[in-house]
Image 1 (cartoon, rainbow, N blue to C red):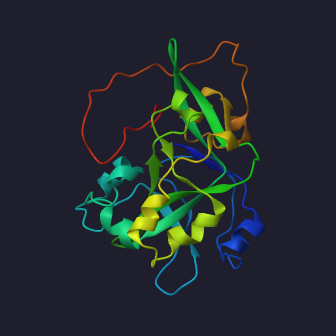
Image 2 (image 1 turned 90 degrees about the horizontal axis):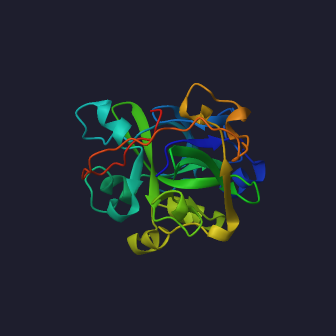
Length: 244
């Protein structure tokens, strides 16, 4: 799943290739983005170029009775987005990309969970594939997750959908066919990614500074997040991570 991520770089050329050279949203580096917080995403409407929008993380479907559902829909499993009521309309009409340059996971180790920071070896920014919706006047989004690649399978059983640069405009284009969209729902190449251990500071959303993504010595004493046993449940959402 994806429950925390970073957005610390916003490469101008990357935005230009997406047709976002006139971006109007001021960029503020974020080192610990958490659910229910607001950030920038890119969307595309019929016969229009991509545009930046401010959106809150945690999708609230247009038909929802209240906004509480949003905190449980931070992720959307790729296998169900074409059919599940919370996601199917957005998958057809309201796809988005979410700007990032890394994300966090919690790896099970003896005695607890070790936070790790995952990013591209190149250090380049990238985008997650996502879905958005409007509930009353509030725009919200969810990050799609897929099966993990070989690298991340040792960390978690899901990973966020990272779109290659050449696939971004196809993902956003309202005219892209369902079959072509489905072909994009695959893990990112493992040989282009890496991860390393970080401190448990990431468990606290208010800590949003470069220290959160600094590598820690895996041999030093760590303040681990204890493993919490949860009952299995069937739903469209994925469980929240420690610290939420």
